[in-house]
Image 1 (cartoon, rainbow, N blue to C red):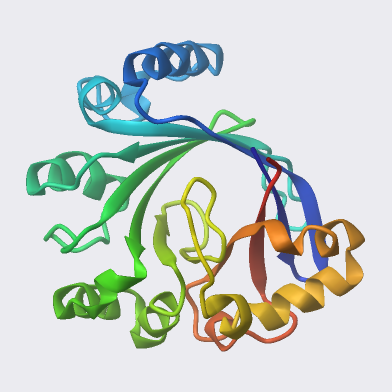
Image 2 (cartoon, helix red, strand yellow; image 1 turned 135 degrees about the horizontal axis):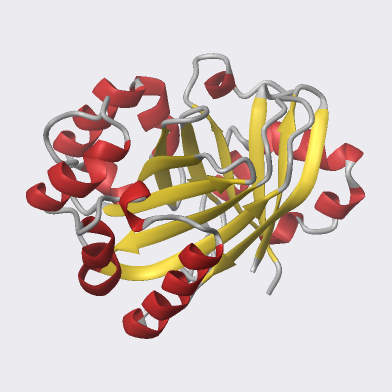
Length: 252
């Protein structure tokens, strides 16, 4: 389990929780997700197409993640339950048929290198469903010019520069809200020894600034797994007060 804060416009929201499922139990997880989708009143066709959802669950899924994000008074965004599916690979057919349609502004070609793709469906309390695509990489992958060039074109040179400074990083492309860059510090479920990012990440300044005003976060700084920030020039300068920042903390 993880707990997370959203810092945005002087507001701090802590009404957010993240459940990370185990790998290696695809059929059991698929049954539970089928139950959850039915309870939410979602039609599989609203997620990835009538056939795509079954393929993702039973043939492509590595593990599932589910989160709850409470309402955001500042933006008037309703509460949502988000279903994430981490996929085993990202072949061209899968990318073009099931991942790229989630965010049509993505390039026609599949991301190169050792990518771990995620698909996400956010089911809002209002009944709206939004889709998102995520691409996760270990830092070493950015030494591959093809990976660096692909995401430089898509997200900018500064985003790639910051991503390669961390144990792993992720690019999130969202149809309903801000595109984000995720930066790992002590990622849950991954053995991570000492890393330069622990004392040199540019995200530390706004993270420590936020912790100064929030004792619950300050007490858990040693358990911060990820920090996510907008893919914008302003945010990637990492001012003390970020335009938006999500901080994820391991609970166990």
